[in-house]
Amino acid sequence: MLIQENISLRPFNTFGIDVSTKKLAAIRTIDDLKTLISNELMPIYILGGGSNVLFTKDFNGLIIKNELKGIQLIDETDQHVYLKVASGEIWHEFVCFCIKNNYCGIENLSLIPGSVGASPMQNIGAYGVEVKDFITEVEALGLKSLKIAHFSNADCEFDYRSSIFKTKEKGNYFITAVTFRLSKHPNINTSYGAIQSELEVMGITHPTIKDVSQAVINIRESKLPNPKVIGNAGSFFKNPSISNEKAAALKKSFPEIPHYPQSNNTTKIAAGWLIEQCGFKGKTFGEFGVHKKQALVLVNYGNAKGKEIYDLSAEIIQAVNSKFGIELEREVNIL
Ligand SMILES: Cc1cc2nc3c(=O)[nH]c(=O)nc-3n(C[C@H](O)[C@H](O)[C@H](O)COP(=O)(O)OP(=O)(O)OC[C@H]3O[C@@H](n4cnc5c(N)ncnc54)[C@H](O)[C@@H]3O)c2cc1C
Image (cartoon, rainbow, N blue to C red; front, side, top):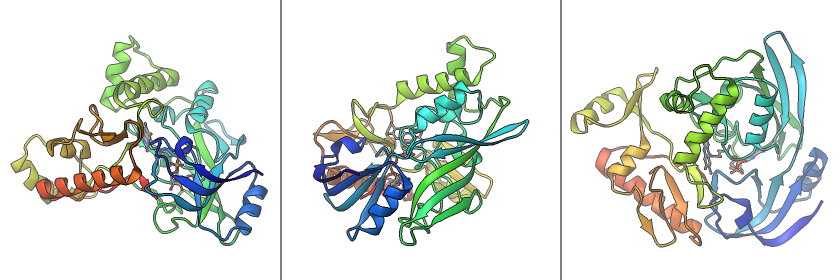
């Protein structure tokens, strides 16, 4: 196992932030992972594709780059397949594998960057689908115990862009594999309006899961900056949930506020709209700024420092709070 010292993390994060790490090691087996962890005294940070992290300073520790690979069909019924997927597999490649084999369910999550292992971390979601609805088990190595633990779907405490691995058990486990239950029979989900419209543009009336995937890819490519061209980590903030009473009061002052009533007496508000109303959409500050098409996405145009992007996020949080009385929460992991 090669351990590199004092190297730049720029190629390892989609924001393209140039900080260094004391050590970096890529692991391909669980035994390598155990050896590495048991001998390490410095802080450890796990990295998949680096598409949901903002580095604000040099890291004085060991970054473990996850390269565990493999997809196993572990069970099958008339209706479903159960796939155990090593956490270092690339998420979109796994989605493509499922589409090719006609395993249905996660096609709406096409083109989300990153690894399979990070998908349960924040319960990735897009276009009306969340990954939690397909995960039956998460396998993880305890970073202190060096023992493998198994988390059922309920154990993971999935929530909107959250799970136990981002809350109570933050930093305690290395997710080694995720088991998914996918349908053998297509149950196409085009509830998200933009997918319907894109399918119409594509001239498709009876979509297959491949068509849905292509529609999602087309929409994403037209709306979101490609991190290979402009550094970013997707949505920087979560969409906030507020009480129905507060939402009703806000609607009086801002009748056009985009709001989505939830089942638990709360209302979700579009964070991008709040940010746009505060005048940040498309604003640039030298090397960094807010994307011109999507106010939720903060961008690095070249050589921005992570701290500058972090400070911009703090300024946005403050501006939204003073205009709307809503505290935005960062979705991106800050290091
Ligand atoms: C252009 C763009 C679009 C995006 N669109 C979406 C979207 O539509 N929906 C969405 O939900 N997200 C989206 N994201 C965010 C991101 O792609 C996802 O959160 C993705 O799951 C992150 O995967 P990763 O492997 O890059 O994680 P990383 O950024 O490497 O890590 C993220 C966090 O998870 C931890 N982690 C990673 N792997 C493991 C592991 N094996 N075990 C334990 N901890 C681990 C890391 O320590 C870190 O705290 C987008 C990002 C970009 C750049």
